[in-house]
Image (cartoon, rainbow, N blue to C red):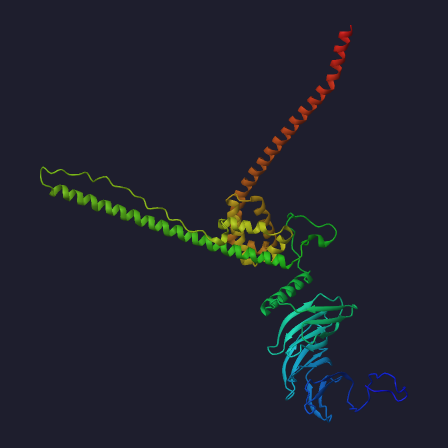
Length: 467
């Protein structure tokens, strides 16, 4: 605080600055940061230059201490931790570097953002720091373990140019090119780094799927032999691959694995039961023969005059039929019905992409399960639609599999009979509905004619009475 020389003696004091020292640098200066120590002998000043380096000087003598280099583009922002042990630099090369101020060694270099990093700030009394970037996101980092804790995006519509952290670290304020300020308040909710990594991977995967518009597939409703008229895009699938369709494909693969495992377990259980029943029958027959032989020997050795009891009657006690405990993962369905239930749960607009993402190994296994479903008369029409789409999509690969191709030919003979029966049943029901409609219309017409004829009859009766 000082009073200007030309001011009146009773005028108020005002804040001012006076030039004390000057240090010329070899290049343009982009950023300057002081350390936080109260000891003037340990106080240092860090200067970021346009030549992509950071030079550190002693504050008391302005003597050169150490030079930090490694960034490929100029450093846009930097900060020093509260204990003066760590310096963090953020550069236009999208990297963040952590330096030790004791010897100037680089602890870690982190690829932090998808665009230039405009600002970096430490949280007071910690080694946690925030970074703001032109990619419209803000990241929260752990400087000791070199891990990203949290990513905040989709809050600003423009590039994030700066941020400030409160003294107690309870909130952060950011500013953006879209002329907005955003305040982020710390909550008591726990953050798990693994979950955040999974969310980021899912988001990246979904963005990649949305941007991937080159893959095309035949539509499920398109018949074989139809040709497009006009644009070639008409032959492409109307649906786009999304994270929901990929998850639907994964759930379908899990259902196929579970159904095949359960079918194999049921087959093994039935085979073991048949083997046990056969062994039990052989043992019962052997016991019967031994008992009969013992009875004959007893009859020969019996004393005259003694009465014998007739033990020839065999008490046939059949063993109780063993039942296999159901698999709780099937939700009470049989293996085939569980696969059908999983297919039915997929939303119609995700069905095509869910079938497209299946590897051909799973496609072949799904086709065999669909063949069993159709042979069991379960949702024949729906299974045929799914089967036809898979056949169109993997036509050449399926034709190359001789065993699968023979199964399809055998199914076609059975399926034609089933479809004809369904068509006849639908035609019969349709004819019955038409008959009922015609009967109702005739009754309604007769009722209207009767009502219309009633007033004329009354008029005739009146004329007869008057006469």
